[in-house]
Image 1 (cartoon, one colour):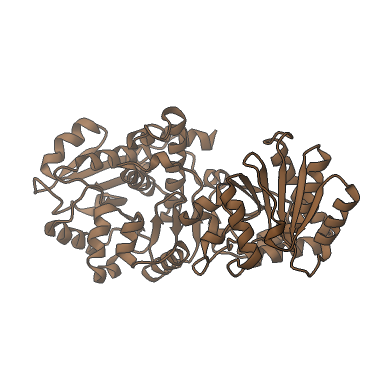
Image 2 (cartoon, helix red, strand yellow; image 1 turned 90 degrees about the vertical axis):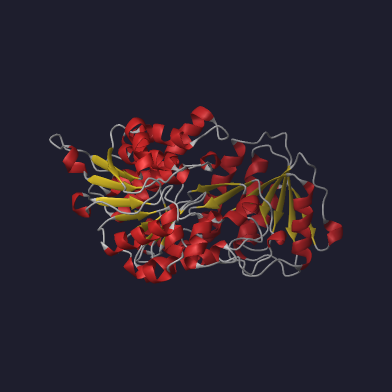
Amino acid sequence: MKIFTTKQIAEIDQYTIQNEPIADIDLMERASLQLVNWLIHRLSNERKLLFFVGPGNNGGDALSIARQMADCDYSCEVYLLDFGKGLKGSPAINWQRLVEQGKVKLVKIASEADFPEIPADAVVIDGLFGSGLTRPLDGLAESLVVRINDRGAMVVAVDIPSGLFGEDNSQNDLSKVIRASHTLTFQFPKLSFFFPEHEQLLGDWEVLPIGLHPEAISTMRTPFHFLTDKYITSLIRPRGKFSHKGTYGHALLIAGSYGKMGAAVLASKACLRGGTGLLTSHVPHTGYGFIQSCVPEAMCSIDASDLMFTEFPDLKSFSAVGVGPGLGCKSNSQRALKELLLANPQKLVLDADALNILSQHEDWYGLLPKNSILTPHPKEFERLAGETADSWSRLLLQQWFSKNHGVIVVLKGAHTCITFPNGQVYFNTTGNPGMATAGSGDVLTGLILGLLAQPYSPEEAALLGVYLHGLAGDLAMKQYGQEALIAGDLIDHFGKAFLELTK
């Protein structure tokens, strides 16, 4: 669940060494063994392994991996970036072990003349620099990284691609970072792994457990987390034998306008699949037939307008309200949204055009009920909160926005980021690129509304909704592939997603 900064991870490493207790060299051996197992299960020993290592602990890990792979009959060559200071501590021990083993070609790189040829069919193991790096690469290190990137070989990064920082890369030069095919990180993902501009640098990344001390992990505080199926499963509440539809709430969905009734249909279906006991969909008069025929389980509230949202029913009957999908931004709809905010619904989800309207009236932000759930995509969030130059800055802005306005922000993306008013941050770990399709966001809004109408808290509804939405997308992808996946497929797989978690 927890994501730590690189400084905190170093502290957990030291706590483990002191309190397990275990020697630093033995912890390095344990960590490298995890990566060795990964490599052996995926690579033929007919492929040459080229290890590029630096003088620090990241290089020490790579040296240990090289020795163990050589013992498994892999052809290994090690190239040490030599800054003329010699190795110390555990990296020095692992270098000496390689010398004594005598199975691995060992070369020190002191200038560009020492750079080896990198065959396209070789596998490069990147152990140059770890997550403790704080400035962009330059000089010989930069030249070596550029050489590796230009050769097009498969690259496996140890813990983090060399040159990438663990958190804030706003001042980094990403052209000087290793472009990995796979990144195998130890125990915890780094925050920078969740940012879109780093996708081409990380490749596919996996977290390998290395047995860091559980007490250090449990007591170390962090606002950053990532979602796991175990945690999400703990949120799902079993239904009572004698419960009835009234037990599971009555949701009000305000959605649709002339030409955009599909959004209302998708959100309505998703809301019902989310488990709400009752749903009333408030739509313009022209949308009545769509809802009644496409979503017969939903009741209809008909707006006085033929074309748009201009009013809403008495909120006393509803346990949660969702507004936005396909709404449009006409002046009458803007007036009606302000009146809705003034009515102070206790549980509220805002999406799509509701957010676009809100962004035009910053003085309305103070009208948002506490713990309202806002579900913007990046451009909508930019309209709400302002532009940022990079994902780290946007994350800090999102945290501030949630705290300052007392709302939950669900910023949609490959790793949807959820921020709470108390400063806590959660990254989602389900979903796939096939979900980048029209209507996917409307489905998420409906699902969250369906959960929110039940006894789930806004925090629980946001986390559970985002995770289930992505999981349904993953299940749908197995049936349709990514290219053919459409938003309706997500709704069709909500049941399987619930079953996947509760089985």
